Picture (cartoon, rainbow, N blue to C red):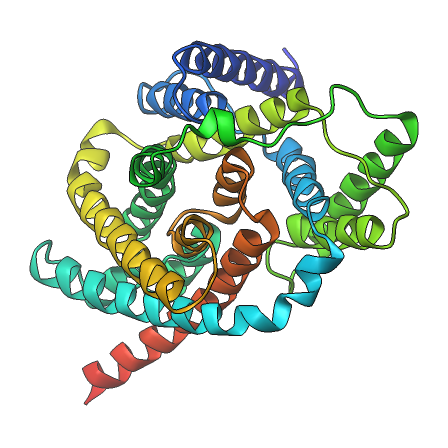
Length: 349
């Protein structure tokens, strides 16, 4: 059988399995059920060595769709608030530095990780970037990959429940209402933004270009009044399923034995980073008039796409949350190499 045909049959099978898992979990009323169900089912199936495939060719348009939806929530009032975000970004920097320092010490002393591996596992940056840095630094690449995959997966599982409990809110009820259908012009602009995002994947120097570029384009179109489209709920459901697949499929090639060897370290890292994020968010909220829930999501150690989707589900300031996570990714990319150089100089001395 043709190799490409086998690949796409596996992709279809993976998507069908993920959709089934998402549908089943969504029936329980669990927050972000489609995302959580797809992620858990694909992760378990990946660890069980079932013939799954990560739909890599489909992820650029999916991420571009997320960026487009985020941009659609940007308003002129929000843009005027940009200078006020500087204070919040200072707290984010402080939170990131504290997260890195505390997690590094814990991973070194309690889990005996080597300095390079401990440093890269402590930085809540993009998983791809951290894996590439681990290869360059001679760190344990498998541990770095698994811990960061678990960091994102556990954040998705924990944060909606934690925030809903903390704020006494029902996530499903707070989700903003969306149009049942879009006019043809809205679909045209939606497709244009996604297409531009897919083309933007070639911009290697940009952080997450497949999300950033369509976000900026969609925001410009909405703020200028060219369009005011709102994406229907079923599009959000499809996006949640594929984001769940993307996270769950990170465990392809990982064994239960490998997972067991690092799950304790990953849980400690996530709990520590979420605790610090919540602490800094509440301090920042006490000193400003920013929404504490939006700050919690903005400082949380999850991925950009995943945290943005949670913000959408909670009806918070999505652009605010997305901007902070983009800033976190950039800061982590700068911090990671700096930590590695510092560790190398200490070793040489």
